[in-house]
Length: 125
Image 1 (cartoon, rainbow, N blue to C red):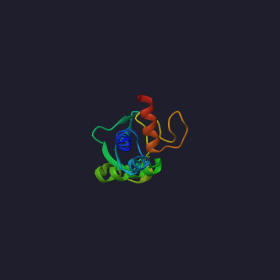
Image 2 (image 1 turned 180 degrees about the vertical axis):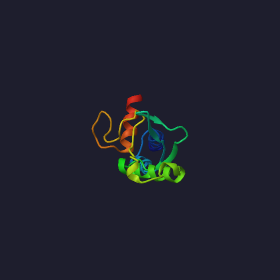
Image 3 (image 1 turned 135 degrees about the vertical axis):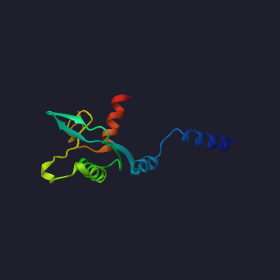
Image 4 (image 1 turned 60 degrees about the vertical axis):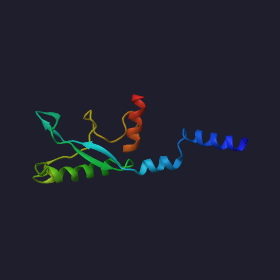
């Protein structure tokens, strides 16, 4: 009798705990982010209206890989962005605050999408 009760309670309690398998599975799932284009206009950076595209990537992506994928995606959809030589344009990855992405803000760790998402969630929780 007691063993049935205990088994039922273990099943009920297991609902509230995350397993490592679920966490690892979540990290290997691709996420969708939005990447836009910013242009230098009158000495100031401004967002180019209508030039944001969704990009599906793994959360473990690094800054350089993200920049490469974003450039490839935008070059497929916006031919006028890549007209001319590559030395004529400078491509950088920027936060929405227009600061260059090198390290995670306030931490100093190298940028990774998953760590950035975790830090943003901490700030707003």
